[in-house]
Length: 227
Image (tube, rainbow, N blue to C red):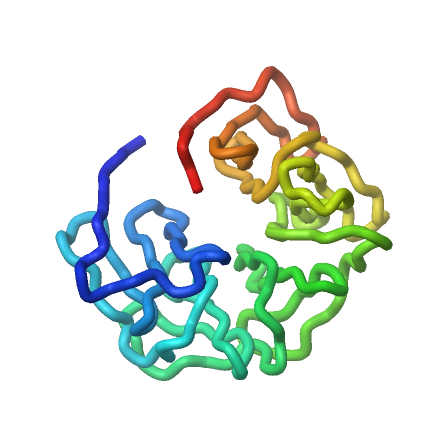
């Protein structure tokens, strides 16, 4: 694991800090972040970030393709788009989509994103989004991710109005069965046999088997003082 600091240049400012502003590529070699001028890409072997040409200035919530060669993002008034990390012409994935409550790009070539009505799925090549997990009454959901095996979706559920009391769950697409994995946590991601999730101002990790949807051992704090 590598740790380092990156200070934004004086001429750059994060855009819409109430939503995710940074995304890390699956291989850990690059990260992208939002700014008032568009999306910037920084490679770990380079000292400076560069603006991705062709991305609109009002783009937010970036996330990488599985191979790390493309970035998807949301544009106010235009919906979901994607573009190669080297820039060029952007491709519309789904128009008329509101700002998502978290999104991810799966190895099966589909994108999952959450909205008020529930979790939607759409091809990364574009198409009409399909509602695959409707929300239940009184719920808010966030951060869908397709787990290995392609049947279960990992996401966070808030039924109390306070994300500090949210749960991390997985729901089967074939049976609709929902399994609570972590009580008291949110914004979870599956990373190499671990669930990484947020609670308060810290990130925690716990051992997780995605096929059986079982969590084992105790949670370990990984990073503290996280906004």
